[in-house]
Image 1 (tube, each protein chain N blue to C red):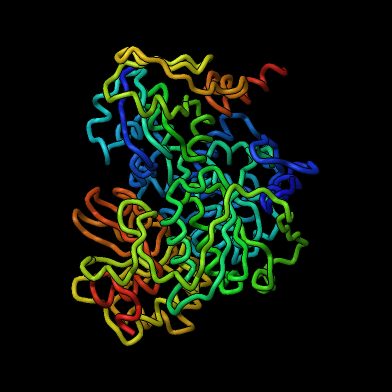
Image 2 (image 1 turned 60 degrees about the vertical axis):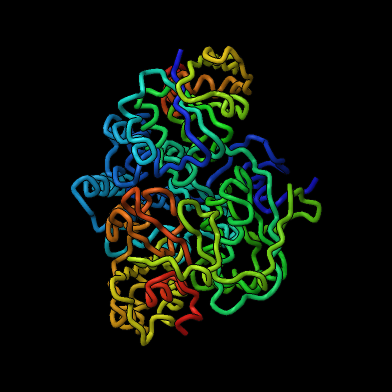
Length: 163
Length: 420
């Protein structure tokens, strides 16, 4: 079970990971600054496996892949939002960060709620409120890509399987 | 059902007779772009995957523009990694200090993008080239790394919104005011996942500089791309820049648009987007209570020679107000030289501004104009998110070069008419 950390609409990539840290590609360093401009306590309060819940257009702005990387390296296992900005959506899948679009869950889940997610079925369970929400599960190839650790890891695995 | 401009270009590059919104396709690419922030991540992925070649050394473009001339050891290391990669694979279009410019000003200037082409770039403002009638969109570094090897990528074919432009541009109004007005109408997710396709008899009023600025900020409405039809203005711009063959695509008469937005230029005045979202559009005339500390004129959005001209015309025989810092950044070395030849640099210096070599620096709070707590900047850049240009409690107001220049002179947000 994971703890939900809740945010509003239009959480942009500049607050997910400010550009002043973009000279680094070190995941741990990026994670240590994740979300700090809107939630300075984020890094210290997130536990491995926790989830982010947010409103509309999560990840809008820059194409920096450092944003989903920083979230993933913070220990976040999934982001649930009403909608995602398209480049963030693509980047998250490519680097193996699970994301689910589910307006109902994103509206209803409160900060601190205990939540579990079944990626096979897309079912989101809010243990605190005793409610469930159905999201559209990913097609098989996307699920596999996330399970393999992202696009490149998945390509590499395919290449090795051919050998 | 007919296809939009974007859908036609994607169908052509996917080798399909037709595509429809929502379809997943694999498309060949004419250009793959990266910069000094995103390319190192892509190169790491490329190398980790064990790729040993790039698909076409003429079709990968690396531009060192975000943190150059290097702001610190880390950014120098990132550029060094790109430089070595470019050398190793014989990448023809590698741009470093001395030849570089801000990528989305540089590529059109150098004729690297033509109508009908398909371009991805690991930079969100790659959508700029829609101004030329190309399909271009921003992706992440992993997509760039994979595409440098494969020469193709996957897309979900976007649905589209048609923006019908009519009327006549008012004095001092530019492409920036048009796009800020549009984003103000539809919101920062108003075109999420979709194409913005521009049409209408008002397009004859929009110069290529206006169009490049408008397409550049399609992403600020969440758009996948923002595209203009090819006309005489496009053809004039391409003359002397692009010699290869290209194709102009027009939408089918029965192309499917989810909705049509009417934009009458007669109704658009100089516009400023207040913090902290580009959709917070306000008339420049109503900003006199907002005192400012800095102006920035430049960026991939407004660093073109036309932008420099607009700022110079306002700043001529004026000086910045007490306490206002002025930072002018011509977007390419060619523009930099033209500013000197045309006397703009003298005007900027006389007005009390500094002139930097091309860099994205201040736009994303990298360097060259970072704001302290409580400071305000009128900037011709594209984003005004929390902390974008520095301290979390600083504020960025997005505007055109003419409005930024006028505001610098008065010390508060101003319509150019206030000083002219």
